[in-house]
Image (cartoon, rainbow, N blue to C red; front, side, top):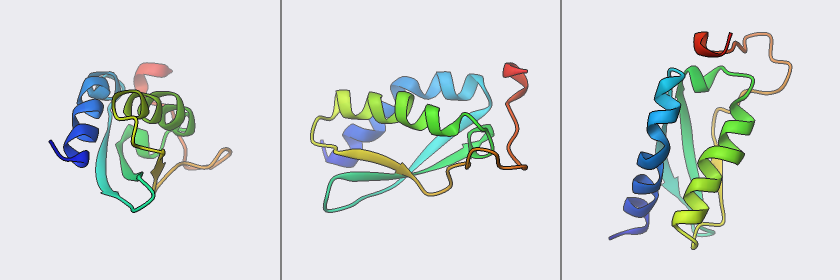
Length: 92
């Protein structure tokens, strides 16, 4: 099993939780430093909690399942205070 397959498998384990709030993630790349680049999709892409979802959810799950991974970075993380940010309907 390749490194990217292991990462995908780890994300598949938490995907139902992301989907429950209308979101998802897409693995884009793993660089030479074993940093996974992801894209936040759906509600995750505009949620003000996306930083917490990324660090406490996705990164934690990936690093626990695939110890070779050194971190996870989103290419489209929502900045705190972003006026376009909105909570998923399930969190309102």
